[in-house]
Length: 316
Image (cartoon, rainbow, N blue to C red; front, side, top):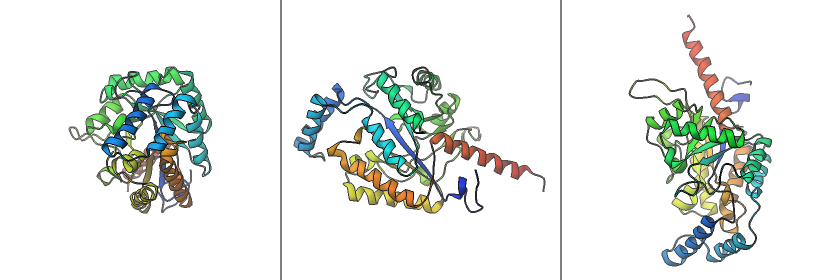
């Protein structure tokens, strides 16, 4: 891939773009979804939670009597991204089925296999959404990688921990030991912008030994839940807040990393969530980024580091 002198990204692009989606649930008609929607309506009425009762009731009726096809949200996401020639990474959650923070689907369900096939056909990537019970356990991370390999036929290279669970170097050390190439966890749930001001991919360092890890960290820039749940923004405010977080990264020539959950697409109550994603991609597309999967970005960053290291060791 060609690279200009002024750019650190392939094809002379001025910044990188990493689009990603965490798959926590795939079925519309599912007991947890019914209960969560009913509880959402209760909180709107009793606790003043943001939302619209009429639209939530409409969703509840849809769930019960005319659920969305399982593939619909994924088709929508892939179509939105394809308009701009973009591709993305989808992180599949693996944890005990129906545990409190676990997935609402089994890896072996045929619907998930169809979804994985759609993603791969579009040039996307399947990663691991590391379960709460696996947190910082290299042995359990390996089990999750093996489970995805057996169920979906993929060799997983990247991980993002569920609920953005992160505890410092021990998280990265466990992920590296489990064979992951990159981690996409490094970010905040309750605020926008990159954690610790990290605008570029980077290789974490083990402070106990001073060793630079082989794992590449891809810092998170903007997550949908941050905008609409934690900060309680509406569509126009969310779009501008997200863009305010994104612009410094573009200016620095870093990597813009977006996280949007699949289950908030094609739902009238969450139309702002989908519209904001679409508008962000439109704005980003005009800037001509190098958009790639997490594995491709990590591979590029590693090759770039190898080139820089070889130049440093050349005799003067």
